[in-house]
Image (cartoon, rainbow, N blue to C red; front, side, top):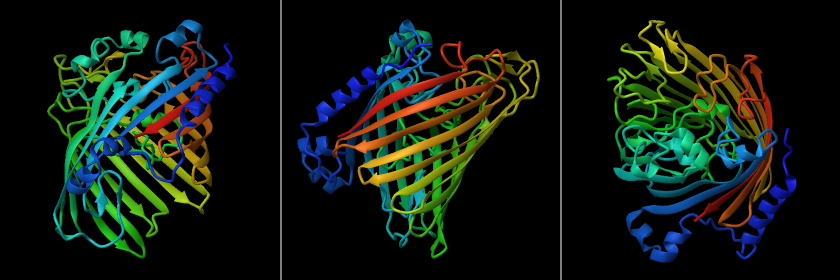
Length: 453
């Protein structure tokens, strides 16, 4: 066992503090400051397009890894969000957005207020470069761009070299049509909006920690297709919206099984937006129909017949008062398998006959003041078939974790998120998901720096 060197964590935190000591804190946000300082604010005023950036850097250590393992990547796995130990350049993101004049924010929420009566057109773009972009790529799009070689075909080398990847997980056009109660349409490549935690770590995201839940690992990363949404109700009883979309599949622009998937959501809010509940889903065949286009590891099955996969999430959030709030999620998933010899699991071989998984997590936050909030999260994720978390882990059993930390918005540009996390595993006695296959528990310490510009 190797103990975490707290002095190294302290040194990393001190370096962050030194960096930001020269910037005067303000009440304004730093998003878009760089673009505006170079080009002025006329562009945004004339076009409605907002250009901003976000970078994320972490320093983490766990109590299981060896010296040599820490020099390779992903030594914190199956934890994601800070997979590498020592300093990890997680991401550098560029956002270009033209918001809609609408009563629905696609994939996020219906809004209270009057129904707009004019057409509106918008767009959304997100470019992501860094370690975290490895799992944000889409087959048939950015999966095999030249900049992602050789790690796109050699994950082991990408891990050894801590290779950085380039992904564009959001590139979509949006429109609002003033018919009925108002209709929003999104078409292109976009993040699915399924689950309580939704990357990236913009300020509005409900991501209290740098490391993510196992539930997030089990959910799709990108969709490509068309998503429509409308607000059904906005009155004293609450705000209700629904969404429905047709997409290619999980992380898939290039169709590999001639079958589309359905995704959708029902979203309810109280009139003051201090309580919300969402139900979200995706369902459709997820198999490689032949060996000519195996989109592994996302699509783990090869079969000439359709193998239905579904994921469901019920999640919500409530603000008790100006200080206390709580969020929670329950997920359930199922991958069908017909058991035929022609249905092949690339991990376990022919005759795949199905897999199920479920999980629950909750986070409680105490906002001490506007720029400082403390959070504690607990989670349980059951993956008895070792299917849902692949390729992060193929262990058969139950994953559990408790995470504690805080978020400190130092100034308009920089936020720090230190955390301590303890994970333990119960399941197949042969499976040891931590410590490179040696251990069944792990303590991880992380300091995360988010820089908005």
